[in-house]
Length: 106
Length: 120
Image 1 (cartoon, chains in turn yellow, cyan):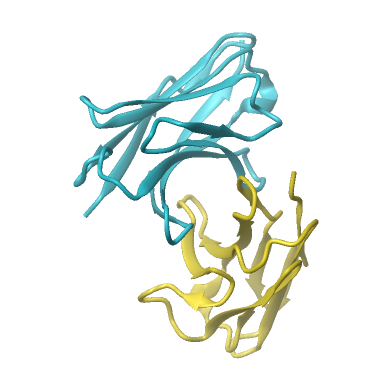
Image 2 (tube, chains in turn blue, cyan; image 1 turned 30 degrees about the horizontal axis):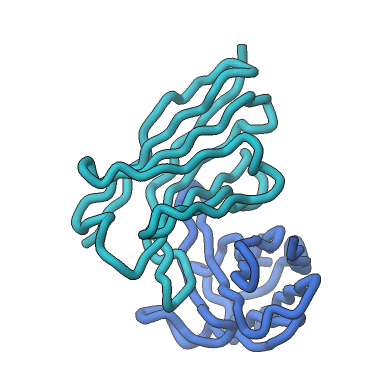
């Protein structure tokens, strides 16, 4: 099984701050990684697919990078509407989600 | 616009079988290029992939649940289903159905989710 270790589990930042979340796979998954945003009471929504591709309609302040086992998700300028929990998800072998990162406004 | 809607029992007794259905509208479940997935989320916790069924009816399951899970498809009704046997309180969760593309492997359409509570 491929395990996904996501960090931090939560963070607090100010509006306009740069926010970075990392995800580490337990084995090489190439670039087979997606990032989702989940707001309370809602289903997740894909933001980044295949490690670095921005889903249509998603603001450009969201970005992703990485390959192999180490991946990064960045919000370049945090906005109030970005308050949510973010998950990485691998599809190198079956499917696994990271533990999630809850992003709050300071 | 494709829509997915989960339905089924919201309360299941321990040791019994959880059964859910995901109705697909706005598109055919038989159209090629997609697989159909179940994902769950215990209250206040993270997401867990349960398994998926392909166009060919081949299924793949989370190894931690494999012995208890069955996913099937009913093309005549345009829906797919989840059965989870021998449930315990640990199976209490919001259950989501979702679609995954066979080329762009991400979950692009989701149901709204349905809470299933395991309790006597």
